Image (tube, rainbow, N blue to C red; front, side, top):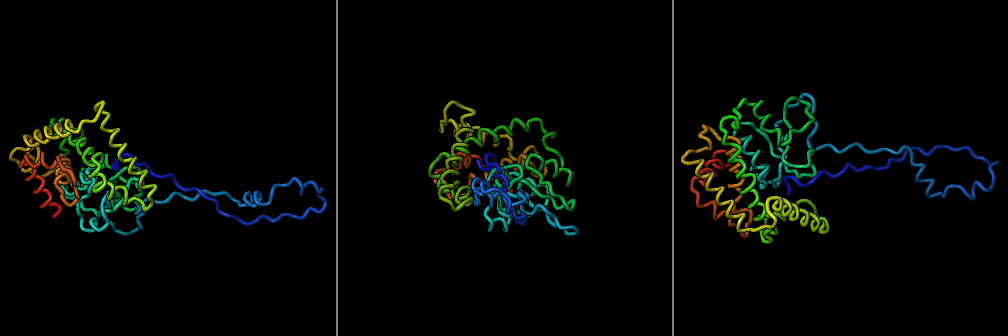
Length: 311
């Protein structure tokens, strides 16, 4: 899937032509030297000296100018126009961290990107504004630690031992149903996924076709890790059970685990509930929206977070 299957393309290597070395004439050389010498076209290739490798291309915005103050930059899947508005990413993994950074009060600019531009091969990643001159990005698996160091917020995993148990509902049951609905339902794939992950990545029809096959196969392989065959009814039933468990956990509270402000778990839930109920994506089949809509407190939680942090 776009969030974790693409890998960065290798750095291009090329030739750089140097000065043609001067060679003294050798009138005394035997005539057989011309007869059995290196053919002129081949010789010209080897005369391109020195052979050099071009330096690796820099990740966009990776170099900070000395003495300047820049904002944090979060690289995500998003339409460029939507990025300027600070709109939610259309990718759950990106939206998860986009929302979390907003929840803990960290300002940042959104930068449209893709997995091929990522130093780790996956989005999101962040370039911090400070310290000045930072050239190493922060990958998603280190974003929470970095955020805690910036604002000294509580690490909610330590506040509630149930965190990991309920997080597995999102990482497996809801995510698996999401993967099937987005990538393996052909109508949704063509109208939702293809437009954002395939058509936006390249204008080459050949590459688009290959990329589409790759994305769908990656989703299929991921789902087959949990079952010998893919049964859409089972996936949707598991997602429904997960929504019910999350609804029970949230209860009448505004945020999960009775916190006074939203945290990482709220961001995890919001990343899916927002996108599942987002009609602007162009869903052609959205069974997950029908299941989710039954749980009014989850819908209210989504609306509260969107209105407070994104509207």
